[in-house]
Image (tube, each protein chain N blue to C red):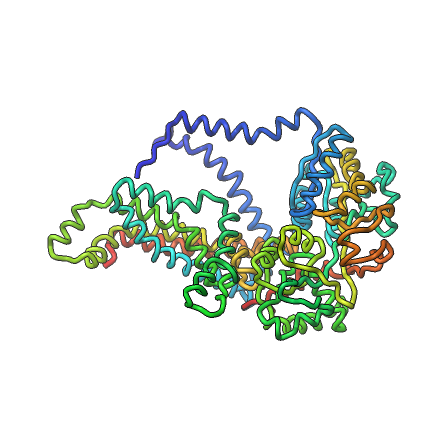
Length: 349
Length: 278
């Protein structure tokens, strides 16, 4: 076997690579660039297709997406503490907000500079950053296999679903929220998770797969590896849009959810642009647009009239939204490590 | 090595120290504390790892997974390398291309295509059902068998290329002499070809092993959350549980363990070079 690479060829390739790497920097020099974190999946698409064009039109500046999960954002901000942060706008689920505030990773949101802030539902007006949507969990099921929508979490225990139940590891909010809700229904408290783990032990014979992350979880549905599993409204909508047979049923014990919010990062390079970028997410017409497929984001602006998939499978009005049960993350966060550990021990084959 | 030569290594050495040795040192320091601020020293992370059956069983599972994947890789990889070494130049390049093909695609793409192959209604199960080899779809995804299969395929080039390079350099007169002296093909393979290719096999095994035990994407996507291996454990401790010092300790333990396995393989390789395999 002989491999000879011409030196000139190699130099040319290396040069091209160098240019490509320098590219973003060169662009930076031309105009102000905001770096905004966003979640993988629906939100990165919503931000790219709806928010970024609007942002460019409004400010003339360019925004770059940094697509990472909330937990990873906290890690990266913590790692860069004291230096310039890797992005200006953080995109968190409720539990990360607590960690970020405690570690001084985000600053109080400058409400006065954000005209749309006061249009939000009172519950969405958080001083650390506006809540832009809600994530709601229920029971996902394959309507081709299960014709009557499951109405109780106990349905997962039904022996007829042996090997057909899916779960996700506790490193996602979905996993934790499911555990917390089952725990509450089985008589546990935020200080005592024994009832939840007892339920889990009963459930394991039915469990066909436990995904290590949400990407793999979606694949389980696409490959019809599972028929019934705790799932999240927005993920179901995304899969449905791709013709995957999946529906969401809200059990009679009620919907459980958490909010998603945007935050100004401590020492942000472009704080003014960051607030303008965040404020766009609060705008009634933009939220109205994001409520429609393929995004189906639950709005938080009080002036947006609910319609579409949200009213079909979740709630009828803004009042109902306020009734969705939330989780006491102040209590849960410190236990996260212990819960993950206990969960891993229980499920290990 | 004279002084002018050794200066050539300086840029690489600087890069290596700044971006590998220094972070590794920080990692080691972090693992000896119980919080990120690193105020008080402790061996607690290491003690809790080695006194907890669940924790060290993850390490053992991971090291065994690497051994299984390497073995399967060798069983399928050696014949490929052997064929390629004997093939005409044209066939050799076709075979080589097929072997290298997997590394030309992203590991995520490769792994997701394996999900499609191994899934309940995947290609493999449909073939099994159509041929009547099984009445129920087999469970391959989220099992260790599945993980080993995928790792063996994905790491195949790392096994085949070193073996091939040794086989290609082997003096063709040696097998000829063996045959001339009356040995059959199998005996020649066993007594001449295999022992002479030990350095390539050892190099291939080291590469395959190190790549298999650390293959986070493949392990977690094909294995799921119930088969916990060290990379997933480290990720969950660092990002999910925010327990960086413990994750750092896990990383150090894992790295030292893999290095120990590699050292053993290396020693076998050196011994075979001086004494032959017996």
